[in-house]
Image (cartoon, rainbow, N blue to C red):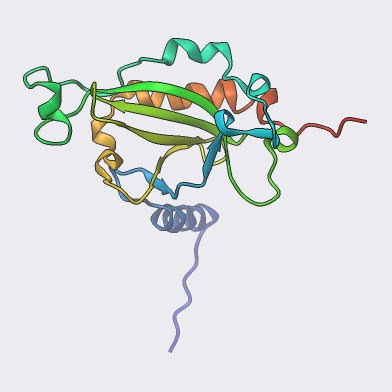
Length: 185
C-alpha cells in the first residue's frame, strides 16, 4: 500500500536545494585539480617565427599583487626547513598572466582568455607551483603536473589569496581580454 504525501511549494524547494547542495560538495580544504593543460600569454605564439606577448601582457592593475605573501608565515624556522618539512611555507605570488585551457582549435586572440595563471613561489629556493583562476567556475585550481601535491591544501593560504581570486573575477573576468573578438576584415 502506497502513502500519499502532500508537499507545499516551500517544502519541495527546500528538498531540491538540499539534494543539489549534497551533490555538489567537494572535499573541504583542497583545490580542484587542473591537469597541466593551461597555457598562458607568455607562451602564446601568433606565427611560427613571431612570439606576440605584447598584445597579451597582464593588465597594470595586477602589478601590486606580484610579491604578495599569500601564506601565514612561520618565522620560527629557517625557510629551507619549512619547505614542506615542518611548518607552513612562505608562499608569494611570483607572476600573473592571462591564461586559457589549451585545446584544439582554441585561439585566445579570437576567443579571449578564460582565466589567470598564478605562479606561487615557495620560499626562497624551493621552487614554485602554478594555480589557475577559472573565470567560468569562479575558483582557483591547482595545476597538477604529476608531482608533489603539498600545495593542494587550502589551509596553507591566507585570505589574501582568495581575495585575489575575487579581484580577478570582478576586474579581469569581466574585461575585454576575456571576450571573443570579431574577425578582422
